[in-house]
Image 1 (spheres, rainbow, N blue to C red):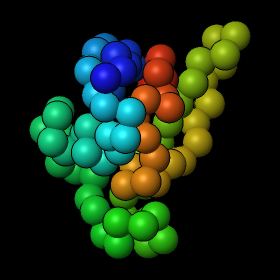
Image 2 (spheres, rainbow, N blue to C red):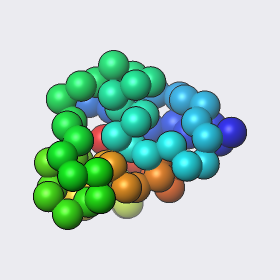
Image 3 (tube, helix red, strand yellow):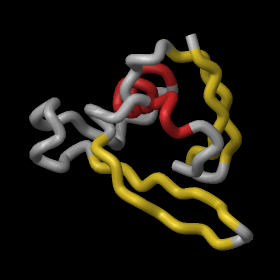
Length: 80
């Protein structure tokens, strides 16, 4: 199990997840945030795309990620 801490919609979150837990599973099953959908389950269709933000020197930047195939523990201390 891995402990991850992040901001979700501006609210601090801390979760215990297994290393293979996807961002999609974390959002939908652990946090009851059902706005992110599963389409193809392989990252090809983009239905599960989420914005991942990081703070660096007070500059906030965002990148997209396919939530269905991206492990949640990869994004410790991120902004979702």
